[in-house]
Amino acid sequence: MAKNRRNRRGSNRGGQPGEPRPRKKTNDGIFIYTEPLTIGDLATELNLNASEIVKYLFLKGTMVTINTLVDEELSEEIATQFGYEFLIEEIKEEDILEQYDFADKEEQLEPRPPVVTIMGHVDHGKTTLIDTIRDSRVAAGEAGSITQAIGAYQAEVRGKKITFIDTPGHEAFTSMRSRGAQATDIVVLIVAADDGVMPQTIEAIDHAKAAKVPIIVAVNKIDLPGANPQRVKDGLLAQNIVAEEYGGDTIFIEISAKQNIGIDELLDNILLLAEMQELTANPNRLATGVVLEARLDRGEGPKATLLVQNGTLENRDFVVVGGAYGKIRRMTNEYGKALKEAGPSTPVAIIGLSEVPEAGDAFMAFHEEKTARQIAEKIKQSKAEKELLESNVFSLDTLHEQLAEGEIQTINVIIKADNSGSAEAVAASLLKINVDGVNVNIIRSSAGGITESDILLAETTNSIVYGFNVRPNATVRSLAKDRGIDIRTHRVIYALIEEMEKAMKGLLKPEIVEEITGQATVLALWKASKVGTIGGCRVNSGYIERGQKVRLIRDDVVIHEGVIETMQHGKDQARQTRAGHECGITLKGYNDIHVDDVIEGYHFVEVEVT
Ligand code: GDP
Image (cartoon, rainbow, N blue to C red; front, side, top):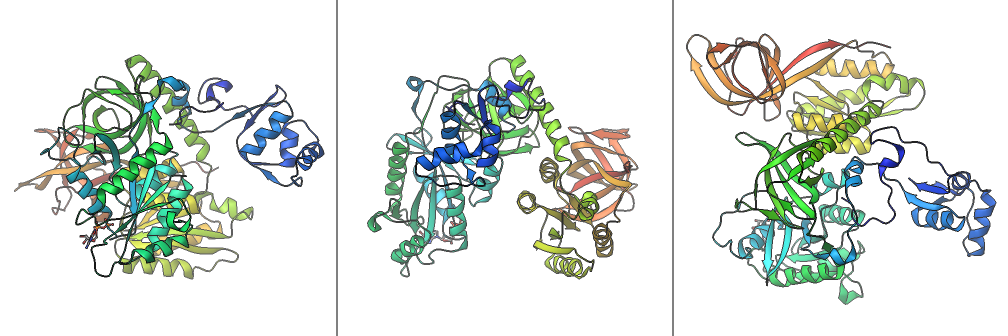
């Protein structure tokens, strides 16, 4: 969450949170910046003649035309020059939380540990480095403790702490960023000295640069005979990562993650860079921060790793996150040790939330339950309104309208299938569809379940996601719903192709659509001679019912489609089981149920055609 914001505008100006925001008004002497505008548009907003702005800039030595786009900085200068107060409007979900956030005074700020993410090409040694640091630089007093995987940990170097986010790879970083959250202060870019700069090295650089996070390069595997650190330096030069010896400002450290060589130097330099960044926070206030990881624990319910970014989180606080809130029931560190409080840059695992939040969600702590509840409700309401707005975005159902209006000539598609052969077959068949003036463009086609990364890719490429014999899990489905991504799942190629062809011809006007009622996970199995295999299930979301159509899903793949034959609560017959409850289930004519299988209930609902 943003802190110490300059002149930033809370969303409460336009009334209650969640109410439609009024279009920016300028005649009250305030200019609210939302995005770059052309000189012409800016002039209109400021009630000026464009020539006045052109002239002003010309006299300052800058030539512009009426169509030149003006960024935030220049907009501020122009608006201020012509007597307007300049404010920035950012439309984000966290706006509501931000209203309750406040800027800290300079004298309240204290240095805080840096938060570091290690990125690099596969096999260049991310995991090894994470493990070496974790195992050898254990925080004081924790020696001999067993670490728990909570998504982050703190290392200690000469009494100073460094927080590492330990999900290797870029996915955590990008999915977090795509949600507007920034947890990382420093990126350690690891490059194997025997392999040099590779595609994911460049990808990592792009991510770090886009997030404006400084990079330290760790040249790894220098113990190998084939190690060539010079080649790494040259390779990175081409990416504008310039080592100090070449006159640049990027620190390069040669290490062997495996043999624990150069690690202290790396950590020292991380601390040095952190010092230069002057990372500070105010430990004496209610905590704010971000969710690093979250999942539903079978025994303990929603479990989340939070990174405290400002303030101090106390183990009896109420935490508001992503429209839910809850009282912390237990707060532990990465060694499973219970904590009373956690200051800035500390990662903690908590239980007690009412729902599983998403990685990247902002959180805020309160001492009072009432405040927490009210704010959570406001966020929920604003989310629902946002969803309504987003329901207008691109989907197969509205394709015919967009085609008719000539808005779309190319349909981007992401295909996920149970194996690569069927993914290829689906792709080939989609490409064969021949409808005048419309093309199918395959953005990604691969084997595997539909993942969050597919949804994020679909969002940036405006794609439809096809699942062939695979289905999204509840987290992915809710992300897709959140981002307005259309997921279509099929088990028969012919049906998939027919649907797409109809959509392309503008014929697709569905009247009956499938709706998932809920999902349950199989926790245990019993064999009963009369009824066959009984799956002891816990319903994770929504509800499931006796007699209902269901799919049996194993590792995201549909294994069986059928009907729930019996449902029991303890010894009693039951008709329905809701989220959070357990039941025993048998499937009609099917016994091959495994532990960890997911049973997904669905039905068909009619939608009005307008
Ligand atoms: P990741 O995919 O980036 O997480 O890479 P890993 O940490 O899994 O490392 C890939 C391989 O490189 C493993 O076999 C490691 O043992 C090996 N490796 C990692 N660091 C070093 C190192 O400093 N020296 C040598 N010789 N091997 C290393």
